[in-house]
Length: 337
Image 1: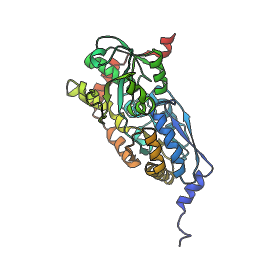
Image 2: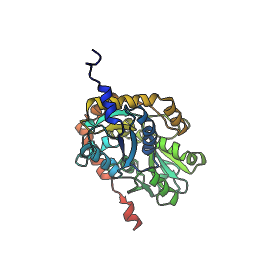
Image 3: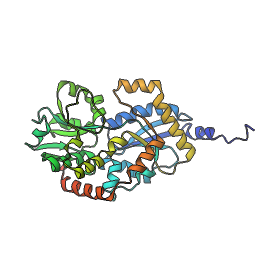
Image 4: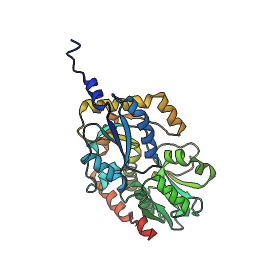
């Protein structure tokens, strides 16, 4: 009888043994997404049946669209390719559906490591220490792509409360943006909070950056007096639009695979992810790297995406109009020329 039972687990192990799993990264090294992906990859491979090798492949640009479009449409759908979807892809599909050659709810979702609160920060020499200061003087602000929350959030603040951020796009990943801040190319940017703490915590401690606003629902000890993005909504309509733009914070550091991978391999990847989130060695490394973990399993992630994709048409229409009105930006490449 035991011999007659299909050896699904063995089949999965046989597939992965000796293989290399590719994790497609939407941002360059140096930021929070790369940090979470690199640390996860080191331990995830130990829990996948067959213990394959795992490497990162960077496909950056267009606010995560290049990576997402590749994984959804061109990558192998056999379980050998996974990705860290940039959290803003869910928002991009909702407000810029023609730019997204994918459907976020149809990816094979594996799990979420943490939510992704962000912060609007200014360099200490920019002359901007508060949001009131940002209303009084133009400040060049570094962003990635025009559809990214790095552009959307400051653009909405310009519209809603009259800040004077001059948005400069083309900075692919927090690592490049941090360098631009140090060089004086830009005076402000928005970054993932956990990445800032993990990679540039000394900047916060020394006052090299000023935290102007927090973006997301998570409370950050020591920064209780810093305003949240949602606090700047002046009416119900603006609050609905800002809440929509906070969806990437909930999606967070999510791990997914192309649609249509074999069910047994998806189940194995999900179990490997869950096991990694409980692995004492992984947890110790995450603590060492100052990575906040708020894991959710693959079914939770899938259900969340399906639910949030059903936004009221009126909210989406208003969000598109406001973002289009405030989304004027300059390319970093053009600026350098």
